[in-house]
Every structure is written in C-alpha cells, then in structure tokens.
Length: 67
Image 1 (cartoon, rainbow, N blue to C red):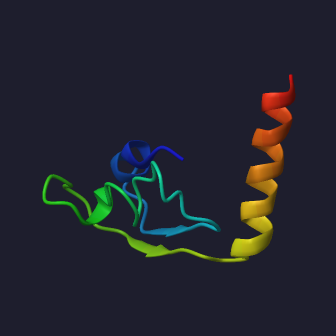
Image 2: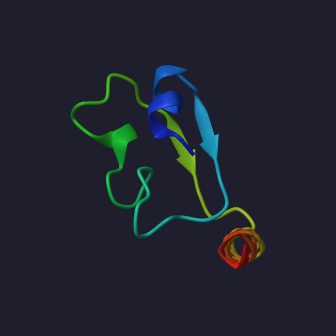
C-alpha cells in the first residue's frame, strides 16, 4: 500500500490485514500516519483476518519468484 497516497487522500479510517515488518510504513517501520511530518491523522485498524491475508501475500510473492 502507498501510505503517502493514503495520507494525501485524507482517509479517515484505514483497515488492513497483515503488517509488513520489514518495510511497512503503517504501524511498523516508518509509521507515517503518526509521524511528526504527517499533516493528517487517521484511524488505523490492522490485523483483520491476518493469517489468511499473510498467506495470500506469501503465495503471491512465491509465484512471482517462480517466473
């Protein structure tokens, strides 16, 4: 997801399934919505159906690596 676009769009609520602990910019590495440089705050709900979302992402990237 593009956190910059989410902030610029001034969304009021972001709901997502799985965090990206290595490169995430929402609630993980950068945490842009709560950062001092952010001009917009939004409510964030993460971890909705986390296990199936994580599996879907892992499967998709595994397929991309195969060819």
